[in-house]
Length: 144
Image (cartoon, rainbow, N blue to C red):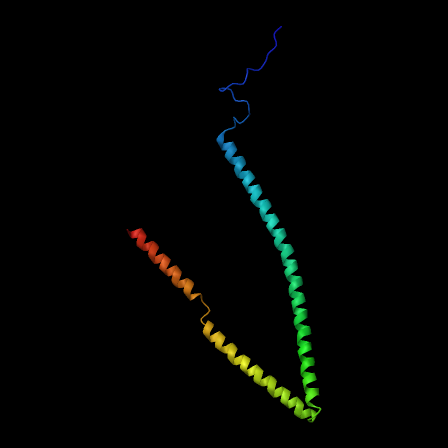
């Protein structure tokens, strides 16, 4: 009776089972990479969903703060009218506050129009010029 033993591992003997064809290894690597990318995409989607909820809540709170701030400004206008109504008739106090607010609105509108005029046209002119220069340089280097 003889017992069979595996041949001893040596420099010419492979001890691990990586005798798979290269095509299978490439296919498996491609599949694993695809699974990894999909997993990362799902993680990114979940993260963006959570951030979107937070942005929504934050936007709602900012909107609420804006409404309350607007009401506060109205109360301040009423306070100014009431304060001016002590030495003047109420109609005169209200007229003075209205004129002051109209002047402030006109100044803001003129300043806003100047800013919009300076921004026109709404194209990234510097970037367009930079891209044109890059394309011209690429064409020139391709012709050499």
